[in-house]
Image (cartoon, rainbow, N blue to C red; front, side):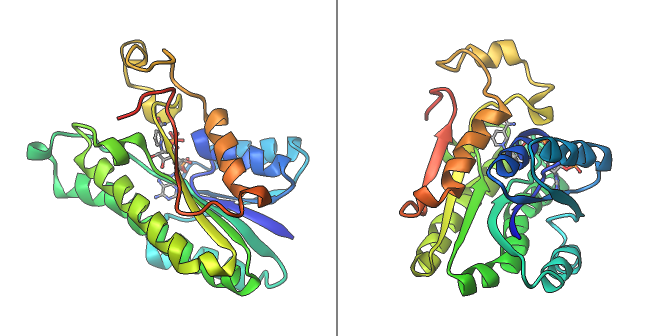
Length: 242
Ligand code: NAP
C-alpha cells in the first residue's frame, strides 16, 4: 500500500490535502489531535474520493505519543510505505510579545517545530531506505515576513523553513524531497475570528484563499514530476508578498 500521512488532517487545509491525496490514489493516514468527529468526516470524504484511509490520533508535539502511535503503525505495516508526509498540524496563540506567556510561546513552537521533528523522525528511515519520499511542510507568510502579534508563530514557521532547507540538502541524494508551502490568509477555523473583509482588502486578489487551493500546491510537491525540486518554499497568498 502506498500511503500519505497528513498531520492535522481532520479539518481545514489538512482535510483538503487528505482529499487531494485520495484523488491521487494514496491510502490516507489522517492524523488529528482530539476532534474525532471531524476526522471521521475527512475519512468519509477520502472514501468518497475513491480511496481508502484510516485515523491516527496523536499530538504531534508529544514525542512519546508520536512514537507509540505512529511508530507502532510503521512497525506493524512493514509492507506499506509512507511515500508522502505532510507536516500540516499547527496552532496559533497570538499576542504581543511583552504580554506573551511562556505557555503561548512554548505551545506554538512545540506543535509546529517539535512536531515537525517528532513526526519526520519516525517516517524518514523508511523513505531513505526505499530511496523515495516527499516531505511537505506547512509554513506561513508569517514565517517569511514576520507578523506583529505573532512572534511565537513567526518563529515557529521560520524554524520549519530552516529545517526544510537543511533536511532537503541532507537527503537529496536519496531521492527524498523536502519542500514547504507558505499560505497567506486561508479560510479555515484558524482564521474564523479574523476580520475577513478588512484583511482581504490588503490582499491583491481581494479575498482569502481556500484550503483546496493550498492542497493543489501540496499535490504538486507530492507528485513524481516535482522530483528535481527540493528545499523550496512556495507562497500561496493571492499576491500578498513581503
Ligand atoms: P485549523 O483549521 O485550525 O486545523 C488545525 C488542524 O491541526 C486540525 O486538524 C487539528 O486537529 C490539528 N492539530 C492541532 N494541533 C495538533 C496537534 N498538537 N497534534 C496533531 N494535530 C493537531 O488550521 P488550518 O488553517 O487548516 O491550518 C493548517 C496549517 O496551515 C497550520 O500549520 C497553519 O499554521 C498553517 N497555515 C494556515 C493559514 C490559514 O490562514 N488558515 C495560513 C498560513 C499557514 P483537531 O481537529 O483534532 O483539533
